Amino acid sequence: MNDITSLLERFRAGDPRALARLISYLENEEAVGEQIMEEIYSLTGQAYIVGITGSPGAGKSSLVDRLTALLRQKGETVGIIAVDPTSPFTGGALLGDRIRMQNHATDRGVFIRSMGTRGSLGGLAHTTGEVVKAMDAFGFSWIIVETVGVGQAELDIMHVADTTVVVLTPGAGDAIQTIKAGIMEIADVFAINKCDLPGANKIAAEVEMMLDMQGDRLTWRPPVVKTTTLDGQGVADLLAAIEKHRQHLLQDKTLGERRWFRARNETLELTRYLWQRMIEQELDYINPILDAVARREKDPYRGAREITRYLLEKYHQKLDHGLK
Ligand SMILES: Nc1nc2c(ncn2[C@@H]2O[C@H](COP(=O)(O)OP(=O)(O)OP(=O)(O)O)[C@@H](O)[C@H]2O)c(=O)[nH]1
Ligand SMILES: [Mg+2]
Image 1 (cartoon, rainbow, N blue to C red):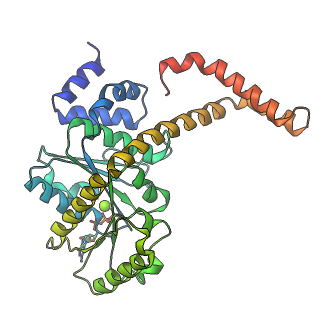
Image 2 (image 1 turned 90 degrees about the horizontal axis):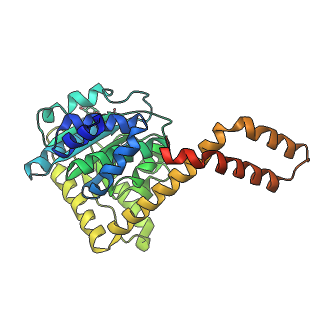
Image 3 (image 1 turned 180 degrees about the vertical axis):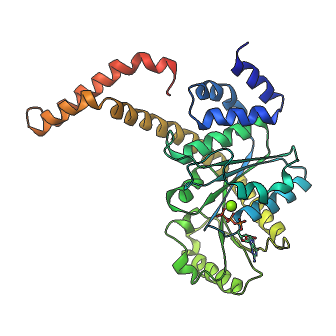
């Protein structure tokens, strides 16, 4: 029996160390990751996936911590992924999150993973998706993904999450100024956190006003929930809002559709990435063709055909041994 077989056996038996090991394989893009995915993919699709995003320090981890406690009280199990796209570290990184979420450190119904690798196969969203799948297959009923609100990673979360919570805080100035482009589109629920601080009502009202402006374009109007993680106020309402959105997606059949498109898109993305990578790896062959086109000795169509033919022939055999 090889290592992977026994690892998968322990994984299926519910050993959290096997889950941790397996996630490392997936994150580090070891070739064996593909073998693992082949084995676990059919087990996925059971967990409900919540994304939590917002500016640095908005209180995302504190909210995840509180939400997790509530879910555990209801007998749910929770996998947590803390993504920091600005950090090159993975696995043991983001110590702060670990410490903050220590309440759950000894609870077998909770599994916490931090990740922060950039430039991975198909980007951070893809790697996050792989880790989500591992936790999903492992059997967690909820998976919460925390991403710091910087750049694309924040917007990418909607490709992973069923419900996306955008966390805002008072005192960060005018909501309309602070809310970045694209955020209104990805939010299924708004949490106004740090409501113990002045200005919470103002920002909540501003967000409501922005939602008003979107009018009946929305089939789902994102609820705006006020929370304070210091004493946990409003966290039950936040969970209720998430559950309400889940019901909405189920009634609307949108959940099935979202997941359907997600699986298709993921595969297409991967296929595109694969072509791109083959091109990058074969620049020695490709560059002279490009130069010939630039010198007008060859037309671009012919150049593209030559490159494609070369890649098809070269990689035909290789593919049988996996993508990585
Ligand atoms: N006053 C107040 N402070 C809060 C509240 N929630 C969180 N904080 C504080 O805000 C700081 C950041 O909280 P985190 O939960 O780490 O925020 P985060 O969004 O996960 O931060 P990053 O992951 O670093 O982006 C901590 O010092 C918390 O104690 C709140 O409801 N009220
Ligand atoms: Mg955090």
